[in-house]
Image (cartoon, rainbow, N blue to C red):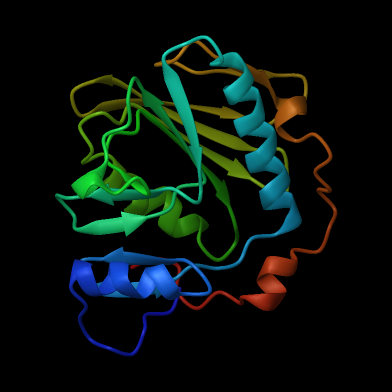
Amino acid sequence: MQVTEQQYYSPEEYLALEEVADYKSEYIDGQIFPMAGGSTNHNRIALNFSTELNFAFKKLDYEVFMSDVRLWIPKQRIYTYPDIMIVAGEPKYYNDRTDTITNPQVIVEVLSKSTKGYDRRDKFQFYRRIPTFEEYLLIDQTKIYIEHFYKTNNKRWSFYEYDESDEAIALSSVSFQISIADVYNKVKLDEVDTEELLNPPSKEGL
């Protein structure tokens, strides 16, 4: 991610720019970072996962949001766009903006080579500042590999990894299960990562 030229932006300036931008950017405590474009594998995985979630929650009090919905983390002064968010009950909107929520319970990120270090380290640390946040999944788009973190107590998290296609993932904080095969349905694991060709990595973290 490359920071924009201006040294500092207020949250209001960022939101005004985002309204007219041709691409999404993250806001991190005064700085704006354009987000890398997605690949077909990235889109397939996010769509597979969110479709199964949406069907499972059809009659339950949970909502699923994809990457067009923004997340505001006030303690870190961050606006970002997780790939998938699960909200228990009603979404809490920031400043009555229906494009920005503050209360995800589960966050799912599909990893790309240029951002996977940031997603694993800094972003996970930022997410843990959200009071409602209890579970985090990181899905590799180039091979069958998923990292699953879930909160067990205050400031304590457990970790599980999946790397076999005959396994299934069961969420801890939500009644939901999905097979690895369904997560990777139609995903071409031997495809060239076109996202990397178009957006070569310039910064692994912040």
